Each structure stands twice: as structure tokens, then as C-alpha cells.
Amino acid sequence: MSKIKPKECQNVEFKISWNDKYLEWICGFANAQGAVMYFGVNDDHEVVGLKNTKKLLEDIPNKIVNYMGLVVDVNLYEQDGLEYIEVVIEPSNVPISYRGKYYYRSGSTMQELNGPALQQFVLKKMGRSWDDIPNEYTTIDDLDRSAIDYFLKKGHENGRITNEELNLPIEMLLQNLDLINEEGKLKNAALLLFAKRPQRYFASVRFQIGRFGVDEADLMFQDVIEGNIIQMADRVIDMLKAKYLTMPITFKGMNRIEKLEVPEEALREILYNAIIHKDYAGAHIQMHVWSDHVDVWNEGELPVGFTPDTLFEQHSSRPRNRNIANAFFKAGFIDAWGRGYKKICEGFESAGLPMPKVENFCGGVRVTFQRKSATENATENATTQKTTQKNVEKIVENSVEKSVEKVWRLIKQDSYITTKQIADAVGLSIRGIEENIKKLKREGRIRRIGGDNGGHWEVIE
Image (cartoon, rainbow, N blue to C red; front, side, top):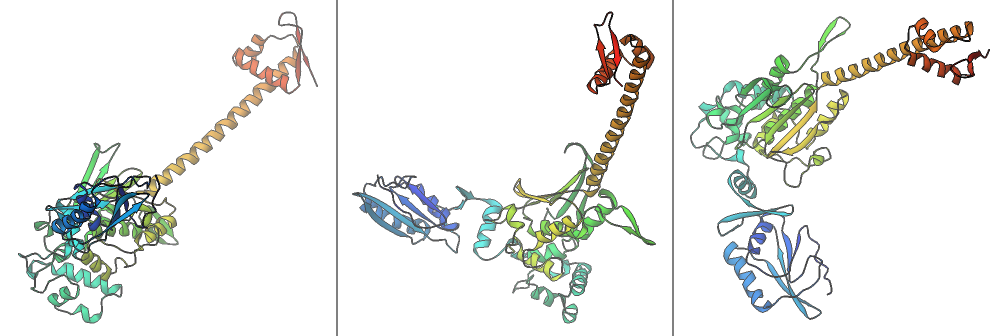
């Protein structure tokens, strides 16, 4: 059988026959990056041929239009007397469903979208994010003026909020930040950022910190940070300084310096990422503090097409919650160029710590980083062990050297002395004396004349 050269495309699929089940695949490809599907061709690109191609040329496009409202290119080709069909699916800019269900092609798998995943998908296709949804039952009175003032102060200090913006009425400020819709309804982002009690509207607006011993069952103590997310990173840092991480004291001249054991700016960047990119329909943010490392987890995996390696390379900024990200940018907490992890790496490298590890974990993103105190202790212990080992080796070496010299002097004094007599005189075991004698023989300082019984030692000067 001869082979075909498929069209260049991110996704190419080969099927030896047509089945209506593949309408789900077409739906999934349209919702993702599109694809080209070949029917009557096997996985080795060999044409095996199709029957009833004339009927399929009518059925396939009609079913796709009727069930999904999609218009696709369906082409018939012939090679070596065998016919096969090509279906070209372009990515859709609106959500596509098949029989009331939404499918999405991710990697090599076809997924049916449900619950929060479906909500996020639909919002993304509509050019919106979850934090863009208005809340019908809240007003500006539900916002905390002190949180807004904190935001304005930080933004002004970082040069991203002007003097004019400092004095704007709250409603106009919210409009400029796109945190309120045309009807004056607060968006989810406004409530997360500035509400007096955001937990009334979103159960997962919490940051839980736990100190663990040998394993996760060994929870030693814990704290929960609640409240608006614009001030959450500050509250977490304060709690870590008070209870969870060390602040070694150093002196520069007469000045006392207390510096957090991990680079604080890099740590803040990790916290900002967890807060901004969190899926707020999921679980709360969790931080596990261990003796030698810390890990931070937030619900919501990396963007489609991103891997952990992508974050440490040059990449675009693709926040899950765009309105929240914009507010954090205006406050001067982050930039808009996807440089967050570059700054994290620079901070940890300057502190002499290993680079943090990032991974998709349990439906979210987990960042793990080493504690400096643990690293220093390990280095100090290793240095101490090496020093101790060297000292022991030196003591042993000196001891061996002294015992060898004692044995040599005893043999020089009495060439007929026995091993047992030497052992008694030196205070070592017979085996120890034998090792000393072997050493003297290797060095060419003595030799045995005759056997053990009746023989004697000869000292070689």
C-alpha cells in the first residue's frame, strides 16, 4: 500500500473507517486548535480505502452542520485505486457542543468538559474570565475603604497610580479598573480584591499554612489567613516571619539586620502567582512548611500549552483572572510581561539557594523551594562531619604510627620476642600487633628468620 503525505497541522488523525463517534472528536478539535482527519488511512499513513464514499461525502458535512453548526472542508481523494476522505477542522472562536456536550482535545486525549472546567472554557471562548462575572447582590457599600486606600498607596508608591487617580470617587476608580459593569454591578474581582468579607461570596478565599514534621499526618500547628486578596500576601509574610520561618540576625557595623531565611521578594512573587492564577471555584491555597523546604499549592493548572519549563523561559503573560492581575499590576506587585519566574530565579540564585520546582499537581500548580536555614545546617553538618572524620583519621594515624615505632623498638631490643609479649608490652591485641609487623615488613625495616618456633627477627637499619 502506498502512503500519503498529510497536510501540515498541529493535530493530524488517521482512521481506517468512518464512525459517528468521531463527531465528538471533530467537536473537540474545533474547541481546541483545529485538526485534519483522514478516513480510509491507517496510522502508518497507508491508504486502505473507504466504501460508500459518495454517501459519506454527503453525510459527514451534513451531520457536522446539523449537530454542531460547523462548516468544515470535506475532500475526497483517490490513490492507487483506493478512495479516502480528508476533513479539515478549523478552530472555532465560540464554544461548540455536540448533543449538548462540550468536548476538548488536550494533548492526545479527548475530554468531556464539565463543572468549573466547562465554565472556564466557555468564558475563555467568549473572551472573558471568571473574575469578570458580575455579582447581582452586592454594592459598593460591601467594599472595604481601607483595602482600597492600601491599593492606592501601593500603586502610587510604585509609580503606577497618578495623583489624580488617588482622589477619584470609588465608583470611577472601579470603572477605570474594569471592576464594575455598565449596570453598576461589582464583578467577582472587585469583591475578591476589596470586599469587607469576601468569604461571604467565595468559600475558598483563604490561605492555609501548616507546619509539618515527618509526614503530612504529623501536623504540628497551622494558621488560616482570610480577608481580601490585595493584602493577603502581606498577611502571609507577616505570619511566616512570626511563626514559620527564621530570620537570622547579622550586624553591619552597628546596625542590626534581620533578614528572612528565603529571599522575601522572590517569596512574594510566588505568593502573588498563587493568588492571581488560582481557580476560585476550587479549594483554598495551601502552604506546607517542612524542616528543609516549603511548598505552595493553588487550584488551577498551568495554561494550555504551558509546561513548568515554559515559566522559566521567555513567555507571554496569560493570567487566569485578568481583572485581578490588572489590579496587582496597578498596585506595582507584578509586571505584565511574564517575568515573574525570572525574578524568582534571580532572587533564589542571589541567596545561594536551589531554583524552585514547579509542577502540575492534583489539579493545580505546586511550587517547592528549599529553606536556607536547612541548607546552611546541612552544609555545616557536612563540614563538621568532614572535620571530625579528618581529626579521627589523624588520631588513628598518629596512634598507629606510635604503636609501629613501639613494636620496632621492642624487636630491636629482643630479636626473639614473641607476638604475645609485644602485645602485652604495647597494650594492643595480637591481631593489632600482627598488622604493625606487616607494616614494618612492607617498609623493609624487619624480616623474619626461621619459623614461628625457634626463629627470630632481624632488624634492617
